[in-house]
Length: 436
Image (cartoon, rainbow, N blue to C red):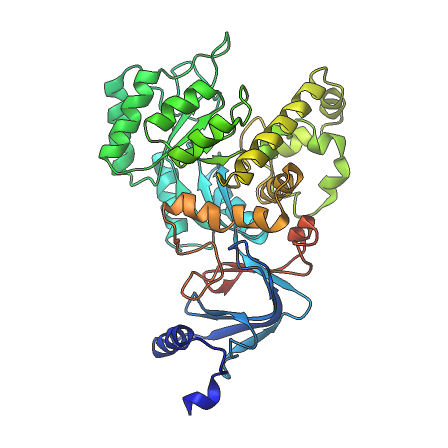
């Protein structure tokens, strides 16, 4: 009987995988039938695909000719639609009471963001909330948290909440141990300033933080914008870098260095353009999904006519736009050489009005503007981001493959043809459940 059910093109491994899933069956089965499949791996899309979901997992995904539709499944008509993995934002901040944080996390889900990282501004109480979100205690993306990050006592960032500002190495080590007790997923350092601006956290304290984090077996993520700081941290073993160096181009030597150290860059482009993007094109704010995606202060900034006039006439606007183009060139050169680029919008930064969810989509669009293909940008926002956050070459999420978590987005149009079609969201699934 089994021979009659399985097409000859199905591999033995796929048969065994599906049989194993059947043996563990118990929950409802959903089959998305007929959609184009972009699996997040970077390869060509699969036309007329079937994606089978059971017990919160992808049971099978592939061409209809190779993946049977289970007779007991709830079928979702994917004709004319495209299915992709859930999107990932590796750089967000949440400065809000718990109920508001839950609201913003739900906003992200509705934009198709099924995994996010809170990068350095979470109090111990907020860390506990993020753990609850990651554990599925309430409807939310999978959340990673860095707890409270580290900077110089008088250094950037100028945030309203408390962060760790150690005066010496022992204070720094003690703060890392406190974060370990909270079971944070990452340790975050801001290395920003110098040159007559706010002072930078010293190289010695940075080294102590990295060393103690290693003893506690906690990975590092670092905000870094100067080449000398990038090199110091990379030589210490830090590979996860937020932003790109503003004082360097992607020379052959620097590309070789980045590859030798296994670096990944989260360029946070949406933050870079936040000083003019919505001011120059206020019609963008008519999107109803954006209207609940800003912090109230951020929404007030982008809708303030006086501030809008000031921002679009700023004397340094041309220089700041040129900075984005420099970042584009850096990203394109690194990506072309095989250095990993991942998505992170800096949504929630207090002084930069970057909306939750919408900022992630804009970040992906900007990667395409930088020269990545739409499929490469989608991989940056799915599998490659998952690899950085999970510290695994084969993460549990980030691609639509048998056995992976069922985080996916069903689209009404093809983002491979136009990356802006990522906003044409039909349905979002998180952990096998459709998001209301």
